[in-house]
Image (cartoon, rainbow, N blue to C red):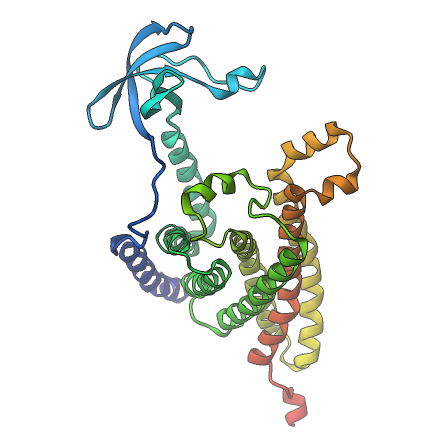
Length: 378
């Protein structure tokens, strides 16, 4: 085993221990969700297995007996909301032995007390996650292991900290910036270790995050969005949380978190570029290194911004098809809240990414490249 491998292993083990400890600690800490959080009243969903077919109910809906995880048996009908739309459902008919999600109502809902709402997809999702983890480990090696731990930490912070604190009424944009900064610091230290490259990437990310949050707040205020912000999910939140949550701030928080992952990539790459350029040619000087690093950064910007915008467009493709069929003017479509929200989210996130390149390059050059070259000193 050579010295470089020993050093990598030596750096990986402490990172794994620290990251794993943080993840476990967050899951073991008391739940931060407020005790007076209002549950969804009148219904409960459980995982179960179909144990018997009971024919059809009086309206013709298939009826099954489902055994849920606690051992109780529930008679439920299949009520697929998409079945009323031709061509919208590609599910095979349910059979005995299928694992499903059954939703029970505390009171009769249109004469139905329980429905089989959807198939149980967790085994498939677990398979996809396993394939993803194997791919990361095969390609990334020891750093891939650290990346997976960092990903677990990020998801844990979102679930165990961000969501409960939002339900407690914390300011969404302040919470998003603070948590995003903390997650950035933790994940970069886990994946990259402590170095000047990491420090430059963290500082560049912090600066770009602050700019993204400020721009998102300014443009969102100017757009005069309603509390729904073009998202039907918000409509379900309003009667449950009332005025306890700043729903307008949720959009801002989503913009910050949406840009964070791409920002990490840009800032780490740019800081590492400055480091390698300086190592390759120490005599280039700070201005020369900055100029060369910016040429690399411009190429990175083109691909990264395109990636972020395409991600938003891909998520909204069915909506784009709907608007295309409506025959409305493109300007009217863009002006609609449901589209304008996504446009601002994508463009503000892209502005933050673009700004991250010069910000990180400058910070990295100040940290790594001396103001005077060896030739100047001589």
